[in-house]
Length: 310
Image 1 (cartoon, rainbow, N blue to C red):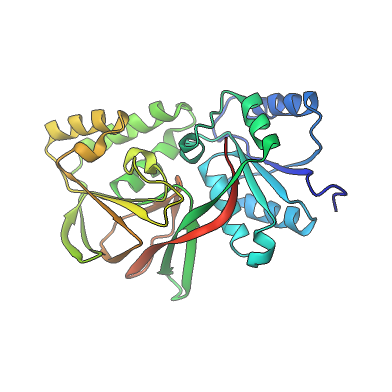
Image 2 (tube, rainbow, N blue to C red):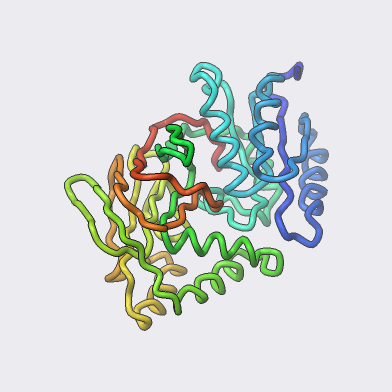
């Protein structure tokens, strides 16, 4: 157990597909030593092992957990923290040094992977905010009631398919937009639509939908106005546009103005019920999840994680 409760417990998650995955840690380690930071360090084999390592850190008394990784690694960390009793969770502060292919939750706070010294200084200052999490509540293939939390977004349909395709191509295209664009372009020529039935507040949507993005934060550009501290989720329901409108949609997406597109219908709500989403994949914080069986619900839990911000 660390003798100093402010000692950092650091979990390093090498970037998938990077040519020199440990180069980032060498830079972080150099910065930590220069600033005299007291820390212990472990490396995860993959993002799915982060939960085990977070449990290990918590059982050994660390109160400052720093994830050197991306959205998927942060997702594992918060889901582990949410299994803890509130009185334990409230004593733990979570920080990030971004090192993923897509670091959208870090980018929301203007935390950039290129400035390691700024990231370390930010964690040293320990300015925190208690943030919200989105949560999907569903039934799995075994008939078990399950739930999973997300920091950034949950996507249903096309965007989830793009995430899966992007992961297949990420080894050669490590820059996030270069990895995302070709995957998206591949989908232009596929009429990917899914029969869905959604209930959002008093509205019922029962029709073919291209994608739904439910954002606790920016949602990879599809929920650009979402913030993880207002107790609400932003929802973008996207109907299938014509090819010319798709091209316009790419421009609006990458300029942060996707809500201006006529095929995008935005909502802001505390909960959304998905009664039907036929054959649609589901992605959560940049990774695929097992598709829920039958209807599911997505809602928000307010002010549940202490996060270090600039």
